[in-house]
Length: 184
Image 1 (cartoon, rainbow, N blue to C red):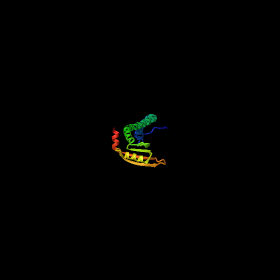
Image 2 (cartoon, one colour; image 1 turned 135 degrees about the vertical axis):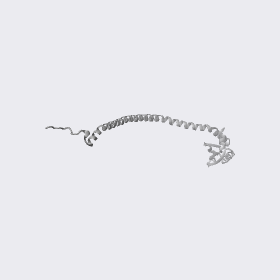
Image 3 (cartoon, rainbow, N blue to C red; image 1 turned 90 degrees about the vertical axis):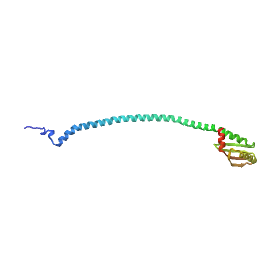
Image 4 (tube, one colour; image 1 turned 45 degrees about the horizontal axis):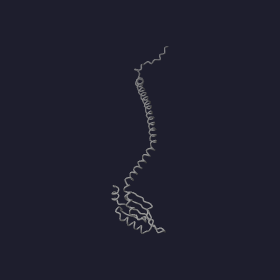
């Protein structure tokens, strides 16, 4: 008795399944190789992208450190710029303020004294004392004759027990006087 374990038909002679197995072994190898190439490409791309992310994080940390270290310098620079612009404004207005104050002091009777003068672009705030209300009235009359005044408002007036008058004035300057004095 003889035992034959070999199939009686060859693979090409067998039905559909045998052809499918033959095709899948030939084409399947190519599919598996292509898949492995894609996986390896993704694997290496991941290394490349991770390296780029690490480099960018290091660059961000470096730039953040630079920004933090220069922030105080920038704040000092801005503060200095603000101070310079304020000084420039004061310097531009010094002739204006000196001309206005010179005119004002020329109209002050000896019996009237100022305790506070505040200036803004077109307004003077004056607080002062007059020995008598009559001297204060004379001072107001002198101020009213000035061509540089737009309006004059008495904000506060109080007669003390000694007979002196404490006053507060708000003087709006005429814009043309401001421009005329400012340009000189």
